[in-house]
Length: 442
Image 1 (tube, rainbow, N blue to C red):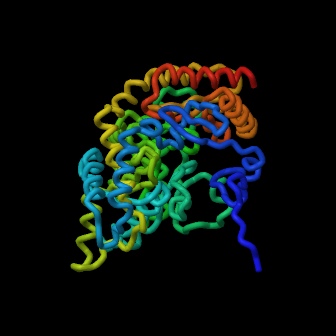
Image 2 (image 1 turned 60 degrees about the vertical axis):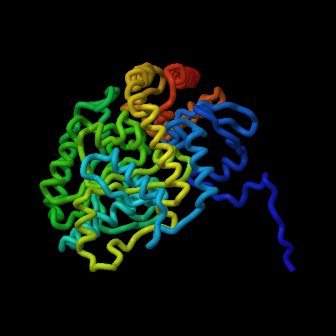
Image 3 (image 1 turned 180 degrees about the horizontal axis):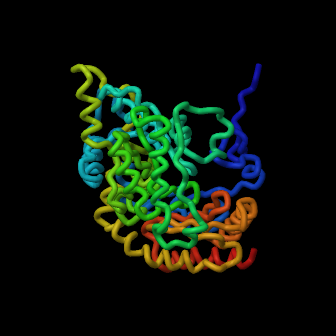
């Protein structure tokens, strides 16, 4: 008879870590044991200034007391309730509050548990919308090279980061990709939006000529591409994309999982660029990262088209998740939104942007720096004369900064920065001074 054994806390074998070199990590593990404000603390007592907001999500710093209290109270009151034909008051309250800060006319929200689920949900809503209007032949999805939309089959198919796809075969058929907007020959070291490249949106016209607009359901893009290394849209690019989608009856989906909730100094990138999508994906900053949650904010036009075609008493959209609108997530979302508004977080981020930009571009001319890109409180520092050299250097810079108490994120050959929006000027200077020291040392 087998004896059941319980592995001790130091046995690392069971956990298959995401997006991690598991064998390397487990051979030399370093644990985060707690967090407070702008800082993480390792199990060995090492303090780390969090320059990446957890993973783009901890916008008001770790352990904000109002968010912690809201989660604790809700867990004691109602730990779970299904949203399948039932409901609980808090999720309706949060939906109303969330849509109140959304672009005008976007008054419906479908809750998910992550950005990946939000991507698949947005794509399914787009297909359902065209089906409801008698245009079910519109099934093609247009993504973009170097785009990232999570790891579900729909979002991964629409995304354009090859290393994330190569293990999984052909994925979903019917997806095509616009060219990315990164043009270092013309736009290197641009401050904010680069001046060249609006015409890259016209590649959509070529796709329409090839496939016909009547077969295309939606275009999905990140207003600022995050995970690929902070690619800021050229001046006029998003406006042109909106114009083409409107002209040809194609839905425009903004993936604002990264850019939502103040990252660009506004509630959403749609506000920053004055370009309104038809569907807007959110996650990460919704709950300040405290409880998993995502969602898709939809225009009234899309909601009405889908629901009006269903017979009375029937389910209008056959889609959803067990934890859609989870009570703890709704409580965290409401509390986070209260903090964003009452503490003026979006305006604070906008006010800090010039100093952030100046500090980022102070790295120009240092060894290994090939390009610097920034917008809002986002920055990408591209390294190396080629991708392979830059990737090696980025890893060395990460290790140098970690040892000296600053947590950054290397993505291939780019250092990606996205700090809590509550960061101050002194901490911003510490981040960039540490990176500068790392570059000089390597």
